[in-house]
Length: 362
Image (cartoon, rainbow, N blue to C red):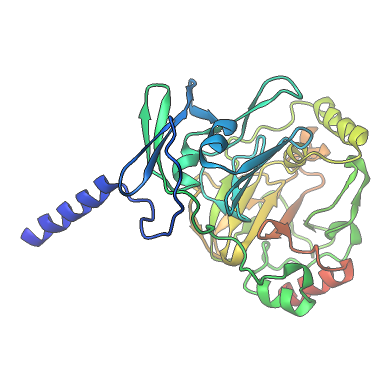
C-alpha cells in the first residue's frame, strides 16, 4: 500500500510539472509582451475566440508567436502549415490532420475558414496545440497559454534517405507486401480505367487509386461484401456522419467547377469519394477506403485494427448512382494507397503499378 501511495504521488508530481519533451534541445526565444519565461520554458499567450461548439485561434496569430509560415490555397481550400521542421496539411471539410506525411488519429482538429473569397481568415481548433505540437494548454479569458520550447526535432515523417521517387517495382513490393487484400478472394482488376493514373474526364482529373468491381474482380461483390483493414494499423477517419450530395444537380455544380478550373479541387475530390474510412499503418503507409455503403457502428477513430477487422461494406456513395439513390448500380471499392502523403504509384508506370499489385495480391 505504501508503495502504491508513493507511485501515485510521483505520477501526480509529473502531471503538475507539465513537461513537454523536456530533454529535447531548444533554441532561446526572446521574451515578448505575449510571453512569460521561467527556468524551463517560455509560456506563450494566444488569443482565441469561443464559438458554440469550439475554441479557435487564427493561424496568423500562432505563426506570429512561434514562427513558421503557411499557405492557404483558395481553389483547393487547403492549408499547408510549416512550424520549423514540422509540416501540417488540412483540407476543408476533411476531419483529418496530416503531419509530415502521417495522419493523426483525432476528430478534434479540422480546418475553419471564414470570410469572403480572397479575404479568408483561417482558424484551427485549440486542440491543435495539444495534439499536433504536443504542448500543455491552459485556458484563460479570451486566450490560452501554452508551453513553448522553440524548434524541436521533426515528429515522424520519412527518413532523410527515403528516396521514394527512385523506387523500383521490387522495392515497392517489399514495402507493401504486408498488406492483404481489402476484399477476400477478389482479384486485381486489369481494366486500365480501374488502375491509378487513368484519366477521369468527367472531373478533369485522373484516377488516384484502385477499383474493385464485381465484373472485373471475380464476382460476388454487393453491398453486403465486407472490406477489411488489410493489416495492423490505426483508424484515423470514420464517416459515421456522412452526408451525401442532396441532389444530382448539386453534384453537377461541383463537376461544372472542375470543368471551369480544368482541375479537381481537393475539397470536391473528397466529396466525390463518398463515405470513407482511413487507416494509417507503420512506415507512413495509409489507405483511404471510399464509396462505402455502410460502416460498422462500433468502429471509431483511434481504433487499432488488423487484417481481419471489417471497416466497411462495398457501396457507391459519392458516385452518380449513389446520389440518384440507385444503391445497386456501379458498386465498387475505391482504394487510395499513400506513402508519407504521396500516392504510392507516382514513381511507377501504369504497367509497373499493375505488376506491383499482382505480386502483392495474386
